[in-house]
Length: 64
Image 1 (spheres, rainbow, N blue to C red):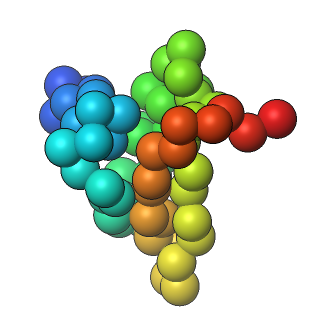
Image 2 (image 1 turned 45 degrees about the vertical axis):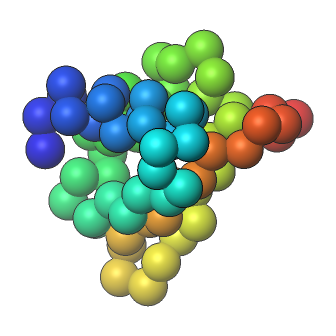
């Protein structure tokens, strides 16, 4: 997955165009590296799935 596509997915989660997004194990590290650079990083919630995949959701309240 390219960086531009990952940023677009994160923007779609933030805007509500996507309610959740499934990230495959092999894409997790590049996705997370871009995610932690975002100002709204703490609004994203990653839910670990069996096998190393992660389901991401965007919340209106930032976690502490």
